[in-house]
Length: 209
Image (tube, rainbow, N blue to C red; front, side):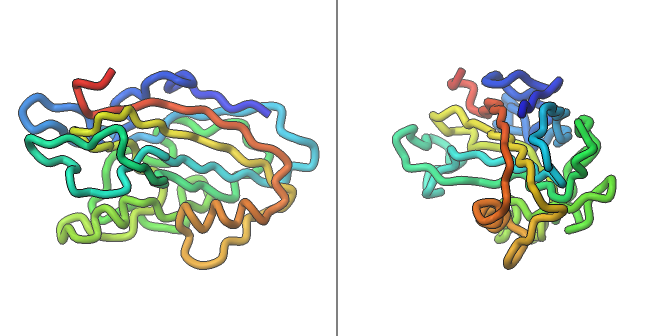
């Protein structure tokens, strides 16, 4: 089972058009195209009935005290936690790709609707729901793909892991809200026949290469 992308190469940087924000000299960041990247796969295991795609960033600061604060940095030594950017479910086993921009093309204040997703799929709630919870202009339920926007003062390069799971069942049964964490917990108990991952890199800190 193999997963690949025409939008970025495994282990290399994700282009800004697939991010939530890009670097800006005056304001540190500016909002970007927020397109989902192209993804394609091959060699699915025999018996695959559906696919689930999850994208997460394992490098998110465990504490937000220094995040995006002038004159301060988020140290690379700070413990990190998972941040889910995308959970896409009920992908037919007959599919072999998702085109760039097919599931997300632009930023939607207060989040995309869900769980119904474009092309007849189902998508989950990403962690921008938590990030924007205290912002009256942006607070809402963020379904689907929303791309990278790591702290602009983070010393650490962030890794965005896209993992495709092949299931021996037509749909993934998720307990509770359709969050990334709950989707991952459901996958741990599902009949997963195989998986494949690729990782893209991203930073908004010009001092990090």
